[in-house]
Amino acid sequence: MLIVVWTAVTLTFIMSRLIPADPARLAAGLQAGPEQVEEVRRQLGLDLPIFQQYVNYLSGIVRLDLGKSIQTRQPVIDDIFRYLPATLELVFAAFFTFAFFGILLGVLWARFPRSVISKSLSIFTVLGVAMPVFWIGLILQVVFAANLKWLPLAGNLSYPKYQVEFRTGIGTIDSLLAGNFVAFQAAILAMILPVTALVISQISISMRLTRTSMISELRKPYIKTARARGVKEWRITTFDALRNALNPVITMLGLQFGWLLGGTILVEVVFSWPGLGFYAFNAFRTFDYNPILAITLVITVTFVLVNELVSLLYPLLDPRIKK
Amino acid sequence: MKLNALVSAKRKWPYVLLCLLIIVVMFPGFFATHDPFALDVVNRLKPPTSEHLFGTDEGGRDIYSRVIYGARVTIGSSLFIVALAASIGTLIGAAAGWFGGRLDWYLMRAVDVFLAFPYFVLAMALAASIGRNMSSSILALILVWWPGYARMVRGQVLSIKNELYIRVSKTIGTSSRQMLFWHVIPHTKGAIITRSTLDIGYVIIVITGLSFLGLGAQNPSPEWGLLIANAKTYVLFAWWYSFFPGLVLVFVVSLFVVIGNKLSNENLG
Image 1 (cartoon, rainbow over the protein chains, first blue to last red):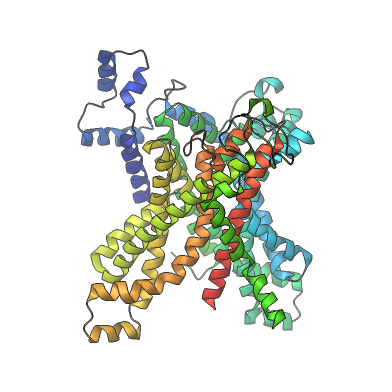
Image 2 (cartoon, chains in turn blue, purple; image 1 turned 30 degrees about the horizontal axis):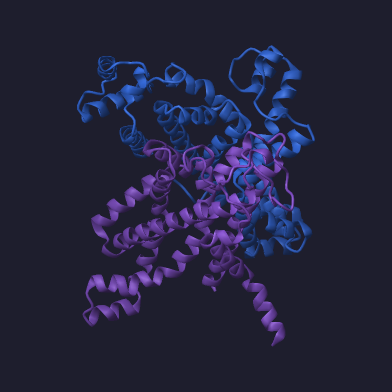
């Protein structure tokens, strides 16, 4: 795990040196003369040998110093802490929603293979993986915000409008902390469309896997034994088969968490949601490289940590797997 | 006899559509009704009519014709990415599995590292640092996509390695390199083709995503992701602008997914 984090750091360093533009030139600004650019280059340590730069970069990361953003003129790490909570709000809401419904629908699909539900689900899963998440987002905007006007078009909780204090950066939690239920309702409404877009784009995969895993579990002899002993069908499905079928699903959910972090970037751009993706998008447009590398690093480390957590979950579900 | 033909025709429809798609990619001029780059400011943002099937965009350009020409950019580049990633991955994976030992260890650790990243984020960061244009996105995606093939082919080669015909071939004195290219790699073909077909669909989604973020194709290219990105500004009053390009995209990707699933079912028996 540490090796992966280290390679992620090294890879971002290599990427930062691949950049076609001169970072000193960018940091000094457009009006700077050649002497000023050289001055900035010395300040940023870009005139040192490449190995020395690499060591400086590593020690910077240990001290949580990721450089400055050209666009916001603030240390990148401060920006990350400002934008990360809003991203996590979306990611976790979407993750738990699609994990729950994915498993539920997958089980129903496996249990009732000839029903209308399962037929529509099998069509939906093909379309679900084929739809790009940003397009789903735009279509949801067209239908529910532009035409039906049920839900807000873009943005998250508007802090000044509802006079909520910015504490965690998570709209729902901040409004609850302030005891402002009107704001809480607004925060939830703002989340519905972006979360739905993420859920639609990810749910097919977990649903399909749950179904396959459940079907192979339901064919096993112990299920037959349980039926012969007269155990109720819903008990067999939920307690016996599902528990054993969950292991591959959990692995997949861990991977999907990582894809969700990528997908949020697109969804945040569509919905102007002030999270890491929105920050990254603005950084792309202004050739602001420090934030891009920092975001890559943060997302990769989160992804690695989540997968590590998932592997700790296995023994709880299946006692045969021990560390 | 007639019934059989009908059933097999029903099974063949994805391939028929695929052929049609290839013709569209190769000869967009036959299908487009307008010049995809011709500006017509008087008719900007007009809803679909019989004249403009998918409506017009902010420059009055015909969206239908842009989608048709965009197929070449989007599908063509995805084909190119998958072809290169599959070839590189196959060579590396086959070398690792066949020769084994230290080479295998180093190559597979490199593969592990790439697979440990969330692929979209890695592709995004690479595309952003190489430069914001279509060729850098293509390069970034090849870099992200080959390790999956390497791991798969290595597994296949390991299982083929001990087959009887390989041992027979060894006893009659075939050189190691000859065996690898004549007997081993051709046997991984089925799995590679199946996976590539599915991957073309997934690569289309990712590359349009990069273009949507402004990292891939640049204006006035009719690339599909870029079309949808441009449509984002007009989402409140021009639904057709984002709807139709996306609909075609979903159709094309699901076609590749359906064919990929069919192939993998046939491979499994």
